[in-house]
Image (cartoon, rainbow, N blue to C red; front, side, top):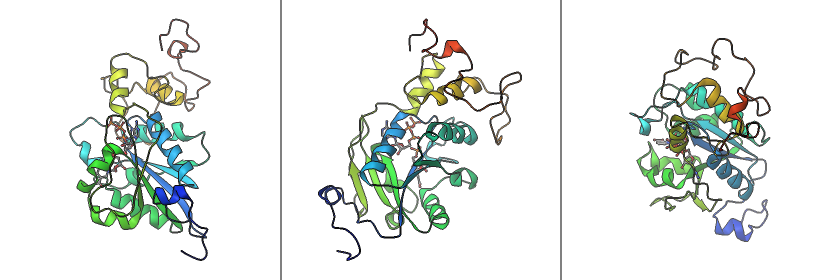
Length: 258
Ligand SMILES: Nc1ncnc2c1ncn2[C@@H]1O[C@H](COP(=O)(O)OP(=O)(O)OP(=O)(O)O)[C@@H](O)[C@H]1O
Ligand SMILES: O=C(O)c1ccc[n+]([C@@H]2O[C@H](COP(=O)([O-])O)[C@@H](O)[C@H]2O)c1
């Protein structure tokens, strides 16, 4: 045992959690395409932060998710802004632009190297759902990933969670089951169904305000720095207390079925 650290608790031993290193912060890294971010992502990050005693969780929206090539992925700035809106109320949650500002396909090995450069004092804990964990050996530089961070695989309904063969720094954690996917959220919006309570209120409002996932292209230029509201609409950030259309908020519209 490291003489400068406290003895491991039973939970730490069971989850293979390394003892805290004095002087080092514990930084969770929640990578994802977040198209859109939903409560499954937020619950997973929150639970890992609690169990692993993380000081902060940084959400990192992908730039070009190469394993989703061929899929219609929303503009990185929209995904980034929805992630900012969704995490704003939690003082331990932050959002990083490292992946969306790096050109080319997004590889986690680059994400972790960039974050290490920015935050050399931090121990990194990369959070993945069971589906992503099952694919991890196909990621670029998989054998080096274990040296850059501890990987925390979390349960996800419909997927089996297991540690990849040959991985040393992997922990597996049961988190509250949230049968939510971004794919389903997009499909619901396209079909005119509500996504209230699947995603944070501000994200519902962002989707409505900018017409995401409706199937029609928006009139905003690709790569815009901040989402430009359509002519005539308000310019303030989406606010849960200020829905753009009262009929889109089930709590103010008695006709709503949400
Ligand atoms: N409901 C959930 N419970 C636990 N983990 C989740 C859940 N949804 C996503 N994750 C994890 O969050 C990370 C980012 O996921 P991603 O942004 O691709 O969302 P998604 O819902 O899987 O999207 P899509 O349906 O578009 O593939 C991945 O590690 C994924 O496994
Ligand atoms: O490094 C890779 O090759 C790699 C391949 C696929 C996914 N990832 C990362 O896994 C995280 C979840 O990805 P996704 O596509 O499920 O949203 C995100 O941070 C991606 O950058 C990483």
